[in-house]
Length: 153
Image (tube, rainbow, N blue to C red; front, top):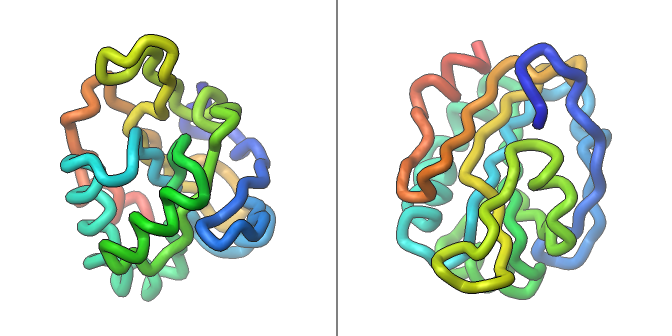
């Protein structure tokens, strides 16, 4: 699992438009990685809409938000469109990035064999170093939004 002070592991994932995006393309900016268990679930919808509604603050701090889930690009596209999400949602359908960063829930929501990303937030500075981590075992918990914003200052 990635911890504070680590160099952020690189990755490439497909966004909701099926365009491959990499962490490296955001070099020189602060990056807020938001791992969420599943599109169209109530807590994930509330969380991603909260980040959507505060995106202007992040932009002023030279930061970008990237949402990451194990959902397909197609599900992420529908989710982004339905909720007017205005930042990239990346599809970690192989679950490799989720496992590497914050971990995963196995048999998520009682579905045998279904693995979902744990709800987690990582803030990466302009040099690619992780300066903030938050991971929860309880998918009903939302991140401490004020702490995430504070980590960008």
